[in-house]
Length: 564
Image (cartoon, rainbow, N blue to C red; front, side):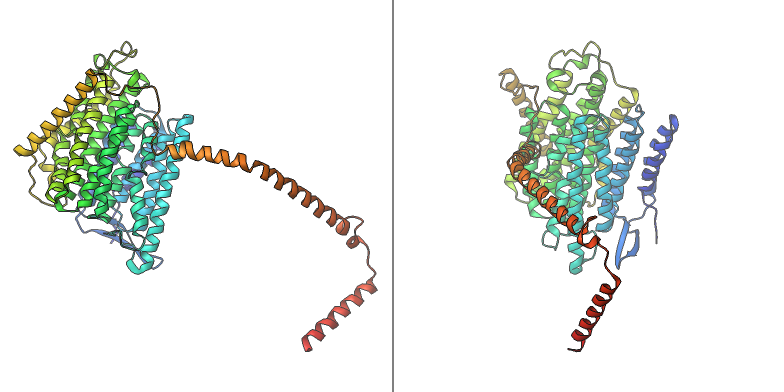
């Protein structure tokens, strides 16, 4: 049987948004995600759409609880992002945003590795457009670096899928594991998009370089598709526990010293992804529920924080913490909404982060991963430190900046989008039952017991105390007018310098080879001219009799060779 993919309305909306103008374009962009979400609501679990291709069975649509959850999430994120971007009059961003969302939805409903690969590469191409759309020299270079890495992830996925299928496993996208043929290649492909340590440079490089609205879409889709893929293909892989624990911790140190506040949020995104990766690695029902629920919540509260910083960038044209401050006087609504996002990402009780992050932390200690549990506690305190406090403090408080005099609230549609996200953060945090009902397993988990609440409040209190003491003692790293590089230093500094040095060393050899090649070519042309030129041997007229003698001789020689 064949079912219409829920990604179709988003792709159709992208096409129509490219030709429609004015209110018609806004209407198309708002309706597209609603139609897609309605299509998902009509699916029954177990529905598949299959066809044969080159002797293999492809499943472009496979419906189960995990796909439905992420499908709803991506349509919700697309709708909020569209509302946030309604003030734009840029067809490139509108088309790219809807096509990007459609690619994410298509990926989570893909039932085979080839279909997943197609959407995987569409994710790369459409998301890169949101970086290019800023239309600066830096965004062009950043977008090219981003595109190369993302396409490389797709190449690894395709290679792994071919090896996997060649060993008789078929192309079905289910649990794969590292022991499977091609498993490591597929794992690395997913790891690039999930921003594993040493593979994360594209995220902190590209996301802050995108447009104010583009970053909101970027924060929602690519990494969450990777989390979905890991949950589908590598649940229970022990290596993910330690990879995720490292992901939760190392970004904290970079985020504390970072000046670009959107880049701080990019590091914070890696930190939150680490919690999800740990949950997938543990692989129990509680851990997987926590990973999936936290992915759902992260799209909303990280989107809210990205939207608030996008509003600041839209109003002031500046996003560096060293240049901002005091904006709460002119942007009080944005400041309040930003603090809701900060409370959510910090896992304050009654906010969304608390009801999902606590599941992963509880699963870690239940399964005896004591050191991982301690790392998660450290990471929880760290995220409150840099995302929960630093972002609103340096953007809206700290000191009065030069922008206070001219600042104002962003366009109404931006405020509406942020308000929707804030309501979801509070609603999910206060009434988590609806989210829990969508999760893959029914574990009976209760987030609001005394131990969970008290432990989290103590953690947040000590983190706030540490930030206050560091500021008063003038120990907290100042916001410097600088650019911090981590792993991308290898391909933004080391690799270009190495190439230039190599070319400089090879220049004399290159010149020598060029000179000798020219000399050899000149000799060849002179020799050819002697034989084939106007006065060459082969340009002379040959008598017919001589030619007949040569033909007879050759025929005779041929007969002799044949009979001998």
